[in-house]
Length: 280
Image (cartoon, rainbow, N blue to C red; front, side, top):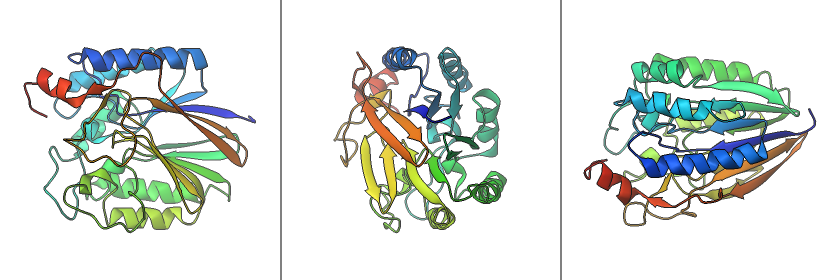
């Protein structure tokens, strides 16, 4: 295969009770149907509330199954719960083994790897990091094995949370600690990734579209496919809009295209909170 086309969607937050998010997902599906990439990757928060709403997971998987191309998934905090950080309040709900198993049972593998067009593609569950769960140690062992198979070729990494804001050793702050892969797991992960030719880190979670390069690695934050978070509730560090990201991988090179599907609407989080009675 001389070229591999991949479409990244993220933070779809699907649930039957949110017609605006479902409508945006259908617009994304129409775009994917027209483009027909080789693979779609959803980088997490597939469902609106997986830990307390199993039906959200089932509903989200059903919508993805209607896509005309194969899909892979990695979980977000709205799918399996959030990981603890060294500072800041404990996450609610915390990641748990039961939620991880539910994700795998309904949605699919929570970490994976494959090869295409001369690249190694790796998807990681970033929410188990720092959790102390058996799943965390198992995934790090699995990653070490996968790294040994890269043989110097280019690698693309997909995970829900960005590794960091600007620098690998960015200090954690209480108000943003849950936004990035937490320390000390982040340092361990970056050390492991430092032994390979990591060309791309693709993430979601922040609901802001961002694209920057640190050293020789390009970091792409996919926007939410579903909704935006206004500036009153979240600081702005990049572009706040709904959309998706398209990639074309060729041996030793890749292209990135930032897309907004036709008729996608910037649903504001306030609309969702009103539907929930003001609770989030």
